[in-house]
Amino acid sequence: MVCPACGAARSVRGACCRRCRAALAAGGEVRLACGLLVAGPFAHEGTARLLVHRLKYGAFPAAAGPLAAAMGPLAEGSSALVPVPRARVRRWRYGVDPALELARRIAALTGVPVVRALAAGWWHPARAGPGERRRGVPRFRRMCSPPHGAVLVDDVLTTGATLAAAAAACPVSRAVVATLASSGRVGGRPGSIGNRAPQGAPEHGSQRVRE
Image 1 (cartoon, rainbow, N blue to C red):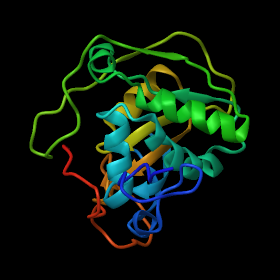
Image 2 (cartoon, rainbow, N blue to C red):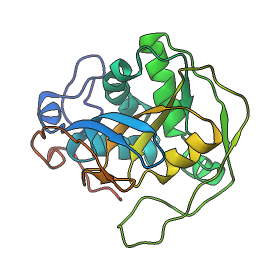
Image 3 (cartoon, rainbow, N blue to C red):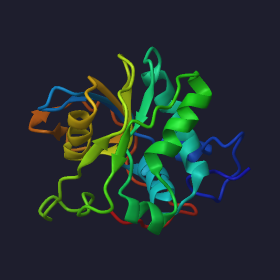
């Protein structure tokens, strides 16, 4: 099998190659202003950023494998996994719902069930991008009430507004994401990002991706 991050090196059972693993930066925990505690295994840089973008914009489901494997231990002990749904237009455009893909893979590894308790609207302004760009606030509708102890699942934590909106629609106290913004400051409060591995995306077989 080829490495799901760089696509150029051999890997074992869908894991990243040794060089891509060396470019993974450790994540940590952030508590948002709304009180939601968010944990993520990786910082949004290097290999982890590349995997997220291959999943999110390249509709490459194999990229979810290494991310979900690292997210699994953070979701253990929860009663259910509630994926934060992508806006319908973007799901149609890119052919994938990243949070749902991650939640399903985490469920396969941990046995924690997926509960699709939230529905997204057709569209909302893009949230990813430079900090000075105007960011829209997504809205979600609760379709059912998840069991006590459920956690939200999403791909990236940037400003925290998406997860805060999801938590407002579906009250939970914790969330698990694949990557955390590397600024160390989310939702108006400082976050612990942890020790960092070498930065930068792997050079072999990689390509520059959008923010």
